[in-house]
Image (cartoon, rainbow, N blue to C red; front, side):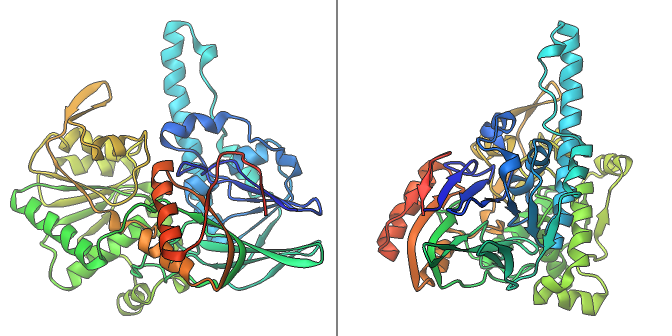
Length: 465
């Protein structure tokens, strides 16, 4: 019998890492992501398996919590084969290099402080370096496309389906022979919501012996796309009426591109007041270039923009600020600007500088457009913090805080249940990638609406499938 173990994203949202040990000895890892928030200390722990024994690494998509520990995996001996989309590796390179850079910066700051205390030897070294990231791209890699069944040998094959989450994100179908029977395990990865603004809807899958399903928003439903669009528009209008500015902490991949498309639509309809919009994130700027490169994989809306304007995302109000000096100049603008900056969970990046300059002013607005993991600064603010500490200074939060979760690239409870309901054959359901309390609510809904039992996967739990 094949054995499944999750070494990340089990009773937590981040760190996605699932190992399938087949009866024939083949070991397949699906994703190898970074833990974030309260769980981030676990990144330095041992994997719980031998990286050198992994035969294949299948990557669902390029978000940090799905690819962020791959350099550590390679550093510790992985020499198997990677299977994924070429666009996913392009995005992963951006994400992993940025991660290595932030780790180095954090280490240097901690080391200097420790030196002054005479405790420099106690400082934990970075998980990996930029050189370690480069090593990932020397690993043999099979680049696939949707619905291109790849034979991995030993009666094992894999097929990638569209997950609708970010550019070329995948639901992975894994086929293997066991006791003369073909078994099929499906890994949902992260499923997209029903907003087709940038990426197409997830593909329907009709059969599986076992399904690993994400549960990020398994406890709730998003507002409709129209309601969210209207809410963002209203926030912008009200903030500009007060001569204020709008801050949007945004994830570099997908969320940023979606917000840009939405603002462009508002501009085209004459619904956006004259203003300056700054994409103030070098990482998001690079990711946007990758989206442009693979535009054929994007929605009809994006390709209509490209055909009509010669560009998907650009319009007159939009400015890119890749250089630090350009970012600092934004501080001189008193009103009528929209600042889109990373990091999406506010645990670093240029958004912190904008917090320092604008969060204390009640004319401004702060708009969260994605999930905030427990233990992150973003979650702390969303949960009602009155002040935050930045750069050794206490900053009062007077800007109006808004949370518009339906901009999330994750399906909500209805979306997840609806996608699962399309299965005509589904024997086992395993819930991953979510916080425990939310998973329990989702589990109840699965039984209530699909009349099926499910199991919430625990960290390193061995499951026979």
